Image (tube, rainbow, N blue to C red; front, side, top):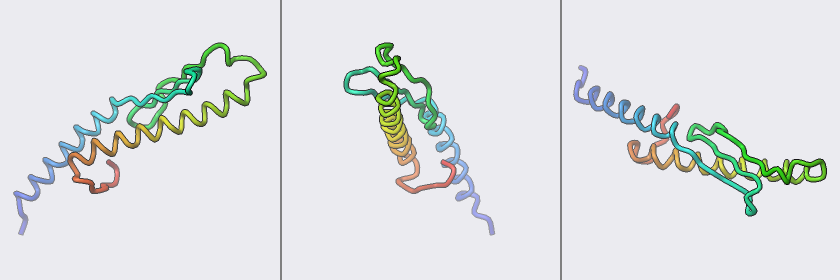
Length: 101
């Protein structure tokens, strides 16, 4: 026999989770080098929104430094975005890891 209350609760939970997912999509996490020469903004969905590079780094001598800074800062911004997303989702799921959310 179907329990309509449980089905209704599940529907409500899914609606809340979809609303939180929209909220996560609007999040932005920022990471930058100590001197501010490289800045990366990552959206809550873990996609890069933009990268800002100080023009002083745009010469051939600093290519390796720029590449290393980009890797470091992108990884830091992605970790921040993931952490923020997990915090928001745990509000509804109570810490449960639900696939796809």
